[in-house]
Length: 243
Ligand code: ADP
Image (cartoon, rainbow, N blue to C red; front, side):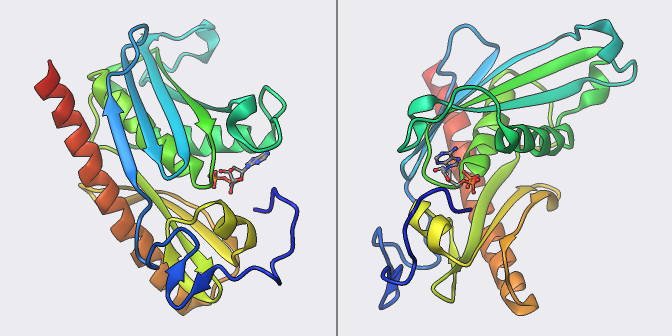
């Protein structure tokens, strides 16, 4: 989506197979993950992914209030996505907007598919995702951090959720778009999967692709998710080693 003024015509995003930040088309940005970083929540994670900086914290399972929202057969998983005012170039107006409400909803649904919700009837599991710095792909970073925070809280899940986008930039299918590519590229395709089962729990497309391009972008994003999954598992192990 375009959130920045400027024209695409004078900007070449890929030069001789090299992207603006030096990456190859199928390369991820640098990713760093840390689990158990906050003391006042049951579980937490911090992820730096390129220039993105995202914190996730989990409360629960705890009794759902108000009571009328309780589900007697399973827990309700709610993710709240928030961007800090200083997370983008022009100060973002604090508080929810249409975009953050949408991201919160689709992310909540993705996590509800992996948490063993039947274990906690009447409960709420609240995940708060705070975007401290944004540079495209924050819904993927947020979900990745959120599932790490749930694991850190000891909440039983089928598996982690691993997320990563692919897209089309200067006519080429590339992995993990950064801001300039997201703004001036042709398409962004964020994907989130449950690696153990191969389920797709989130897939969005912003822009146009042919069927063939879609298949290629989907495969690339899927491979990206598997790489993210490896980093997630290492971050969880690193926390165990620390304890
Ligand atoms: P995602 O972050 O998941 O890629 P979008 O495609 O909606 O979601 O946003 C792409 C990027 O645009 C964000 O990561 C952020 O850098 C920027 N952006 C989003 N919302 C705003 C906003 N309100 N003001 C300025 N920049 C924004």
